[in-house]
Length: 87
Image (cartoon, rainbow, N blue to C red; front, side, top):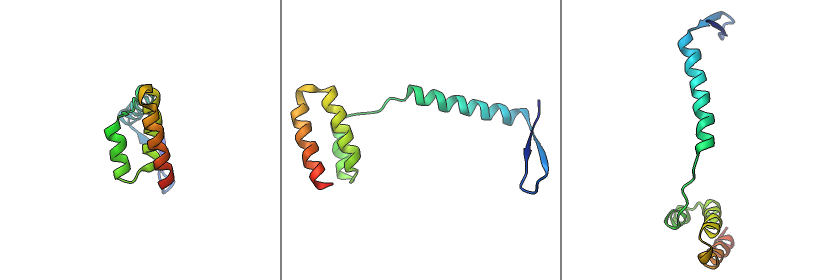
């Protein structure tokens, strides 16, 4: 199986089967990674994001943490409010 790829000079060059298969595998991996992606959420990571200046990302993380740990949601809400004033 050969597919054709157009070159910059308008010349047509054949692609090898290997290239075609590797491109198909990469597409499958990308789809699989998107489905299986799990995000890391933790207080220390949120604090690190704040220290590095990624305020919006930290706020999102604190919102997720408040859903995961409802008993600390008031603490997270106060932290989110404080960060929102900075931003």
